[in-house]
Image (cartoon, rainbow, N blue to C red; front, side, top):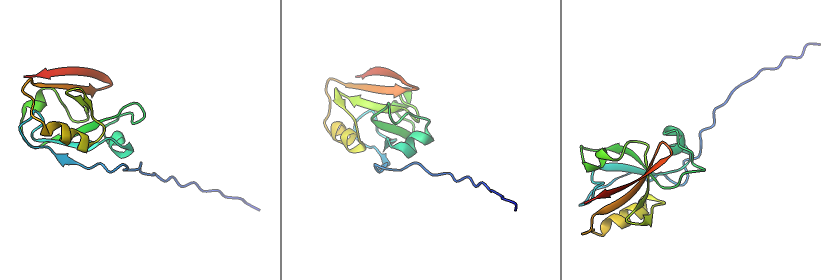
Length: 120
């Protein structure tokens, strides 16, 4: 009696939850024209990020040349703006609704390194 075993490999996509909520930001702020998404396992895989270590909103593209391209790249994580922690795209949109006469303080994680950027 012959026993044959066959193997089949199946790739399981990581969950796209919470929803990525991909959004193009617009307005009178340094992120005008940046496309962002919520960090979730699927987004983390696309940009080689550690979803267990990182929290925030990921820059996933740029609609046009803008100020943000000087300090932000695709796959970078926006962690806080003006001292407010950013966990979701909605958090970022809410912070950006308030104009800042003192400028903008942004904390960004790129390649696991955090940078604090002051824009006036």
